[in-house]
Amino acid sequence: MLLNNGNDINSRQSWRVWVKMAEYLASIFGTEKDKVNCSFYFKIGACRHGDRCSRLHNKPTFSQTIVLLNLYRNPQNTAQTADGSHCHVSDVEVQEHYDNFFEEVFTELQEKYGEIEEMNVCDNLGDHLVGNVYVKFRREEDAERAVVELNNRWFNGQAVHAELSPVTDFRESCCRQYEMGECTRGGFCNFMHLRPISRDLRRQLYGRGPRRRYFRTSLPRLLIPQAP
Image 1 (cartoon, one colour):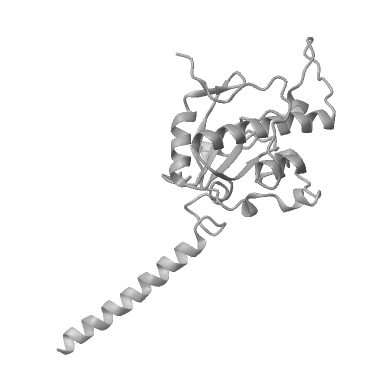
Image 2 (image 1 turned 90 degrees about the vertical axis):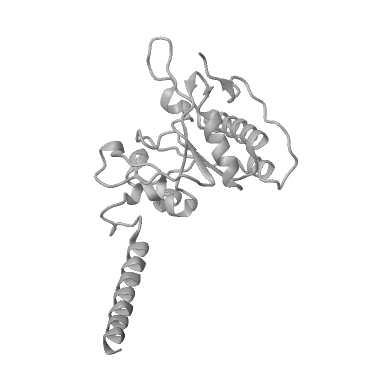
């Protein structure tokens, strides 16, 4: 009986140690203290080291959020004249182009796959973040279907690369210094620099204003079937 009681005590002590260890590992998962999993990938769904990262990138098997990699192209970074020199694009023209792009993608994805809670576009310059479009659906099933179908599509002459993203709270992913206009890393910051849409468009897309289509000039439809 005493032996059984001793075994019971040892078992309870071992269980407490295991629980404490599990709680500790859970508390540091995806943080800088985590030496196994990449904190940047956990927070922003991307890592500047890519496949060469020394830590694990745990890609989710289910998520409300998808990322369309490198989909948005800022005309201030890409516009060129016929001789290859850089072409000046005004801030007003960039915002109009961006609003058109945002509405085009948002509207089509919501109409085809389901309600969107939030959509954000990175204006960073680093290869792992440039032009990334993060779309958070209300339902995980909608996000999963969107990933499957969008990987067979083209947009603006480029193949669409979509995948599920671990990002669900964009407050943790954004560069707070950028939002205050104080980021010293510029476009190569490793946290998201999210480009805002115009106030009127935000009200329309998120249900606080009358719905109307913005004028579009050259933006193609997103859901163009992939060429054989």
